[in-house]
Each structure stands twice: as C-alpha cells, then as structure tokens.
Length: 438
Ligand code: ASP
Image (cartoon, rainbow, N blue to C red; front, top):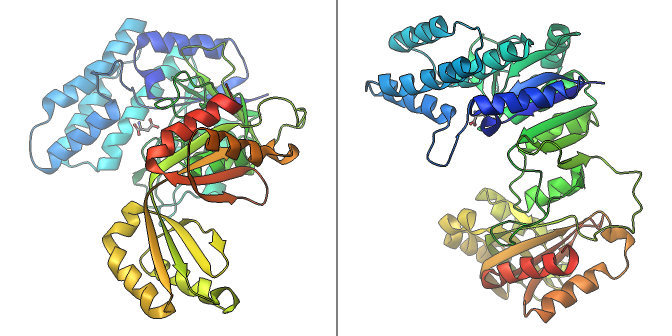
C-alpha cells in the first residue's frame, strides 16, 4: 500500500504545522511519498514565501535591493528549523542563493527555492530522504510535462524509499529549472502518485474538502464526501474553485483515487474523488452532489426563418466566434434559432465586430444579445436514476421567483445547466441547496 500525500502552503506555514504533518504521516505507514509547497501564510496579514520570492526577482530585474525581503524568507525557514530543533545547516544554501542572485538567477530557479527549502526541512524532520524534483519532473521544450520520462525517472529514484519531494518545479531538456502554474505542487503530487502507481493521492490543505456550494452564498455549506471525476469536471467547468485540471489528469488516467484532507482536522475523511463508487446504491443519499455557477455571461441568439433546414448555418455561426477566439460555453438551440452562451469578458472587446459579421454572413431576421446572465450547474451522478429530477429542480426555482432563461442538460444526465439573470443567481443557488442538499 502506498499513499502519496501532498501538503499545501498553509500546512507548511510554521513549526506547529510541521508537527501536525509528522503526526499525520506517522499515523499511517503507507504515507511514504510526501510532496510539499513553500511555506504559506500563517495568518491573513502574512505573506506567502512564493510571493516574496517573485517579489525578490522583480527587485533584481529593476536593480532595486531586496536584502530585507530575502532576509524575511531566510528567517522564516531558519525559524522553523530552530523551533523544531532540526539539525540542518541551511545557512550555506541561503548564502549561495544570495550570491547567485547578485550574479544573475532566473526567476524560475529563484522562486523554486521556496519548495526546495520546505522539502529539505521536512525530510530531515521526518527522517525521510529528499528527492529533488530537478531529478525527475521533466518538461518538453514546448513547456508540457513529459509524463513518461518523469514517471520512469521517479519510479527509479523513489524505489522502496520514504521521501519528501518539492512541488511546483521540474527541469527543461536544457537543464534549466521550470516552474509550473501557480498552485502547481498539486500537479507534482498527482504526477508522483501516477508515477508510483499509488493506491491513493492525498491532497492535504486547510479545508475539509470540496464544498457543495459556494460558501459566500450558502453559509456553512456542507462538504462533498464522495464525488466522481466526471462530476468534479462539471463543477469546475461551471465555476467551482477546485483543483487545477492538470492535477486531476495524471491520477484519473491511472484510476487513482484523490482524497482532499484537512491538515488541521485529520480525523475528517474529507472529499474522496474517484471514477465511480460501485458500492453505493444509486437511489440513496442526496440527489445533487454539488452546485456551481458563475456570473458574467451573454446569450447571443441568431434567428432566421427556415435556418434549421439550411445546411451549415450553425457551423458558420460558430466559425465567427472562433475567429474572435471566443469559446462557447453552451449552445442551446430552437427551431430556426441558435444561441451561444459566452463569457462577457471575451465578447465585450469584439462585440460589434462579431455581431456585424454574423449579420453579414448569415443575413438573419434577428440577432439578440441577453446580457448579465448567470449560469448555474446542478451536478449529480444520481440524477440519472431518479425520474422527475429536473421537474423538481425547475419547480423549486419557479417557486422562488427565479426566471429561467436557458436550460441545457448533458446527455449523460450528470448535470443540468440553468441560465438566468444575474440578479437571480444567489437566490437560485440558495434555493437549490436548501431544497436538495440541506
Ligand atoms: N508555492 C506555489 C504557489 O504558491 C505552488 C504551490 O503552493 O502549489 O503557487
């Protein structure tokens, strides 16, 4: 049994968290491969080490001294070390880094040191080996990750060892360090889990999992205990702030379950994400797994008598949006009218040019733009088994006075997408939560 456990920035913020992490790791011998972030914020006034490192580099770029920022970074790590009594002389490493900064260092290399020092310290604290991500996370020249080469390299490096690995960076074919996107340690953890065929990938953070609805709208929203990868994809596509797509991909591909856990509440089972839950009765439990949504959409509707029998008109409409690099979120249609739901921030800069081309190339009877549209996605793998799900959902919204402007349901019945005016958005989310989850 092997568990890859990734600890995020807030879990690495101070010595007290290092102790919590040690307890978590000691409590389960399967937790042998640990991936870490740089130290995060200890409180809302604090700074993330990664941000400070970016700031250092910006200073270097413009020739402004950054000694005091560097000292803040250095003392954060040395402070954790001394409080925990870890016997690791990091001073030389910091001096060497500071010297490199004077003579020129790439932004990626400098910023990657946050994760590097975190991993070095935690490895020593746990008595685990340190495996540098320079040795195994391989990028291709186009910036994408070379999964096969990375997996082979880690499988070889980690064989039979208990180790701590820094997240967030890897190496280019020309041996330069390259960073991933922000939040990239999640991706490193997923890659490590996939490389080593782990039984589970645990992602330890400061919340007890994915919430069923946006907590800014629904107070005390419950945590999702089980969700499939497809449902998660639906929720994140529709606006839920969950893991980066690139995190899901490597573990999903290998059918490895992903468990989101809370470092500050380790007995909470968190959210378990897997391909399917064979053991569950489809008619038991809540109908809805989660609700997500977003404001800031427009619905553009093109109407022309007889258009549905014309071959190629939908393609021509879509091509015009493609020309302006506008991605179509949803495309509901009616008889002789096609609509596209698009994000306002993509549409606004080219609105008139795009509408003029629709007018010219399709010669429609009418083009209508509905503005200030919000989209709510109701997601649930069990909706397929329960007759009348959509009827109940729409009835509930109707009773709350939400006027529905657009409906779309995926053929796999995993989601129901509902478009409405932005002013109805919060009411819709709250109504659905209270009726179907609470
Ligand atoms: N430290 C990096 C960031 O702040 C990566 C991570 O924590 O996942 O984005």
